[in-house]
Image (cartoon, rainbow, N blue to C red):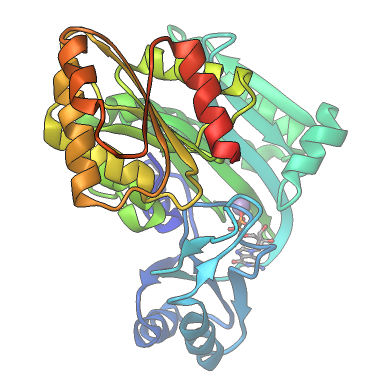
Length: 387
Ligand code: GDP
Ligand code: MN
């Protein structure tokens, strides 16, 4: 799960990681009041969306007057921001963060992520932080230091010092950096994060260190343990169809292709997608309707798939173990009754009550194709999608 920068900075404050003074606003008037209260000479207005690359996309604006704070806020709110990290539609800007600006001497990079390979949390640090860290990682990887932390030993003083040297920090700054690194490490463990990124971590003209940006991802498998984090969820920043699917207990992920897939079981869904690809097609989604499926759930799943305008054909692949094939067939027919289905649907059913299921789908006069085996079904749906 993702949260906004302003929420991440609230967590940073709780864990002693210094951040600029500021607050979020959902109205231009509010932004104005915040800026006046901040009592500075310049402010930064930052679009709050769940994506990086805002700086380059015009989502981070430097205001030199209160009037500009109001103007930039009014300008950003209600728009969508398209960055390198979003799709072509971008994400809605429903809030901005208004902060005091600080004189920046250097922009550094510091993050903490779970490295599955080494089974450690690792700090990643670079003196070449800022908006082009991806280029640095790509072209000059030697400018990036990684420090794995042993889970039993925890973060050690010497590790913080190594990072401080790599970042070119001097004496008194070492302690400040250690506080930030311990804050990140404690926050990561306490809230079951999967990534914490500070880019840029700035050094101000007076030598202070401060997190100018804040990005935190959380482990979805642990989110139920953290109601405070779950409360920060912003559905407006997420895929509409994925939100809807969650409500019906469906496991749905939007993909780029044009073949809608409805499958029961994550493993079978993967195998189905693989086979569709093998036969030269591209899946439009991953959808696992789960084990104890009902007619209503199948119906919702079908609507979800067909709400995607890219879908040119649908493949239903069900292995009836716990779920019964006739229930699936009823769900399909119910969905077709409720919504107009203009695309062909290939159905492969196998398992419990398969004969009853197939009988229900036979001679319906609808655009339905029954397939006996999966390979044949995949071939058929790929051919139909191309027509
Ligand atoms: P991102 O592009 O989405 O990662 O957004 P950031 O929060 O990292 O902002 C992008 C860039 O804007 C930073 O690298 C800074 O150069 C600049 N920036 C952000 N906040 C401030 C600020 O308070 N003062 C100044 N001078 N620059 C800022
Ligand atoms: Mn950034």
